[in-house]
Structures are given as structure tokens and as C-alpha cells.
Length: 484
Image (cartoon, rainbow, N blue to C red):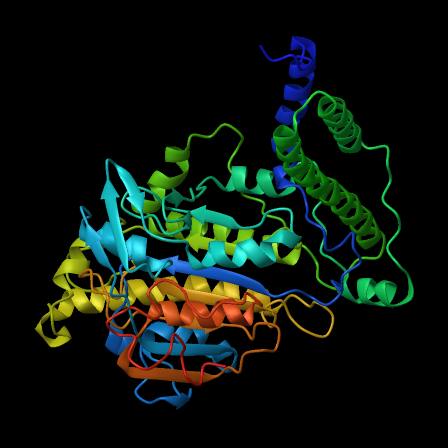
């Protein structure tokens, strides 16, 4: 029999209690602020504003590549910002699918660029999505690594943390707002004050009397008690555990530093004024009461999209998150008043009537109806761009510091996956030239665009999804020549 001292039930329960405390810390902040890293300059953000049903390509894509001179009709609401956007055409998805319908196929390849997607035993498989790849790096510096909001789920699943881990979207604006700001006062960082402070003074030592630190001290104390009765192999496991505990300690330090900076920002406000939403649903409102009207009434639909897009703006402005994806629209929506031609108003029906192998073979009235719907979506996206452009971050605007992707989970409503609609608004912190139409006539993987965006955000990767394996990969080497 083993003669080593046994761990008492009391010790085990105490250690288990410490272990159970750990998940509470998983949403806390990482290390960079507490370590005094250079965070005073406004950070880069990645936003994705994705709609349903693709587009009408001849009314989306400019006639010529190069400097944008005249915007096509669907993009005309962005006229005020045409020197702050890039249009990218000719991008395609080539990933294969297994046991998926056409909508599921398009949705799973949408942000993953995966070479193969499938459903097996009711479980979805794709690959890490571009938003989650970005969040794994730039999301470490914020309260929420990423924000996924809007009308998603069912046949539409865009975000994946890994090949088999789907990221759920939240459709209730009240719950989104509470998740972002419960227990804290919304405040926009004063980046100029932070720059001046970081140049003249080291970060203050975090306080040591918080409840979080008390729990952490308990964890460390129990772990050290446990070490005395463990064998060598188990001590190695304990060391791995303690390493994770020390990472929690750093997050707590960063949390305390963030709280201190927020108080200083409240006392010395930035030039950008926060506009908080006034029309949030009441607590306890069932989700169907919020989303069902969006499918019947375009005015309610527009108000909903504006509200969730405002959450993206608030998340970026308050530095609550630096990665946000908005899933806007529904293929099942009705568009009376938006569509002014013909008799059909159901979006999904129009998507099929208005698309064919060749655009000229589609029903022209249905195609015009689709053009009107997509111009309506662009109007709402343009409002978000305008709000970002109006927010002063001290010498630059919030839009300047964004890469905001406007696209769809299909290339067209006929489930097409060639020539996706792509607009990128913002200059990614000054790293991206704008005002251009970049046309790839020989096709290029959408995954190549994701490589470029990740590199702009400081994520060191040369490959993503099927950027090198797609049948469209050619000699591009996973990149988009001329993008940067």
C-alpha cells in the first residue's frame, strides 16, 4: 500500500474550492496595462458588419479598378466616406461541404475560409474565424476579447474559436449592453492624457486589498499546502496549475489598473462624448418580442440594426472590446416600402428570383428589388461609419483606427460563392491606404483578405483557412498584392 501521507477530505475540498474560483477570473484583463506597455495611442480595432443575401454585383462593383471615382448605386450611401474606404472585388470561397444545405455551407466558410466544412451528428465543423483569430491577440487587452451580436444561429453560424467550437451571438441589445457595462461606468479613454502620463510617470502599483486578490491569496496558500503531500509527478502538475494562477494575478493587476485609468478618464474626460442608447428593451423581454418584428416591419428592422451597430461603436469607443461582429438582417425578412417594384416583398423569394447563373438571365424586377434591399443595408452601414468618423480620439478618429469589413455570408442570394461583396472602411491606425477599388479578376481566396487584415492588426500569420490550398490560390502566396 502507498505509505505517503493521504490528502484529507478537508484539504481536497479546500483545494477544490480554490479551483472552482478560477473560472471567475477568465473574463478579467490581461497583462499589458499593468506591465506599463505603451497603450496610450488609440488601438486598432476590427469590426465586421455582415448582412444576408449577398449583393447585386453590377450595382456594387465599380466599373474600373484604382482610385474610386463614382460609387455604384448600392454603395452610394457611402459617398461621404469614399476616400476612407476600399472596395475589394473578385474574392471567392472554395471550401467543400458535407451534410450541409447551401445556406449552412456559405455561413460556415464565411469568416473561416475553411477548406472543408461539415455537419456530423448535429455538430458543426469549420475552422477558426478571422474575428476570433484577431481576438486571440488584440482581444487580450480588453474586458471582452470579442463581441458577437445580432441575428445569427440556425443556418447562419459565422464565428468559430476552433474547428468544432461555434461562438454564439447575442441578439438581445439589453443583454449586450449589460454584459459590456454592468458594474462599471461607461467612459471613453482620454488617449492624450494617457500618452502624457505614460511619458512622465510609471504605472502606480495596484492595490492589494481587493476581493479578487483575497481569493487569489487563498488559492496560492492552499496550493502550497497541497505541495507538501504530493509526489514529484503531481508536483509538476501543480506547477502548471500555479503558472495559470500567476496569469490570473497579472489579470487582476491589469483590472485594477484599468479601474484606476477609468477614474482618471472620468475626472479628465476625452473629447469624444459617449452617446448611450435610449431604447434598450426592458429586462426580461423575450428575445422573440425583440427580433420577430424585424422580419415584418422594415422600420423596426432598421431600428434594431442601428441599436446593435451602436453597441459596436460603444464597445470600440470605451475600449471594452477591439473586435466586434454584427450580424445584420435575415433572409426571411419582408421589405414593404423598401422594395418599390413588382409585387414580391419576401427577401428569400427575391433572392432566388433575382439570381441566376448569369445576371442577365435573372428576373429583372426581382433583381431591382434586391438592389433596393442592399442599398438599404448600405444606408445603415453608412450611418455606423459616420458615427465612427465623428468620434475624436485625439488627433485621429475612431474610424481612422478601425478596419471595418462590410460584407455578406453569400456572394449573391442564389448561394453563390464567387465575387463576394467587400468594403473595408477605415485606415487601421494609418496602416491602410484608402479610396481604392482593388479588383482581382482571376479570383482570389477570401482567406487571403483575412491574412491581410490579421497582419494589419499585428497578428503574425502567413496563412489562414484555405489561403494556400484553395483552387483559387494560384501564385498569390496567400496574399492580396497591392492591398497594403
